[in-house]
Length: 213
Image 1 (spheres, rainbow, N blue to C red):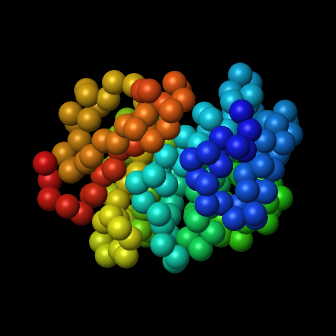
Image 2 (image 1 turned 90 degrees about the vertical axis):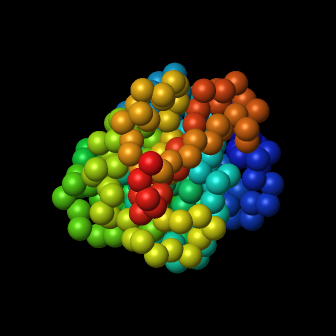
């Protein structure tokens, strides 16, 4: 798998975006050999299982210039770094409680010349800043996650969907979602991407300021 997989689904990439996505493969292989942020078997499928998966969020919303997004539990930079490449006029704050992972995020974003990425070692519960959207990939069960981030999301926004949480997760989520009292909507990533990997992958959108279920 290569950068052409990204080009397949996002054909309007600029030359700079294409070059940045192309550089991710070598950058993550190099850093992953030093600090393990992607499983050894997944590094060969980086473009499918991490980069394109992260960009599933972009199939639901195109972040407008000035949008502020918090990536919670970013690990090595997913979904934040791929989204930051795709939306260079939006601002991304990537946080994780593990310092080694934030080091990788900083090194990768600096190597790419991304000026719209800030990375920080911090637990989201200890933050008091607010954002338009919170994004994440399967950090924990959704209901406790919403408890951490609910009051960090501004009510007023200017995107095509109301401000909220965009959560990437796979598998059977029926039991987990039964705990959630907020209004949510599930998007099947297999509706957007052809690869078998996405057959069980979902994007859950929660608008935390809408009326409860």
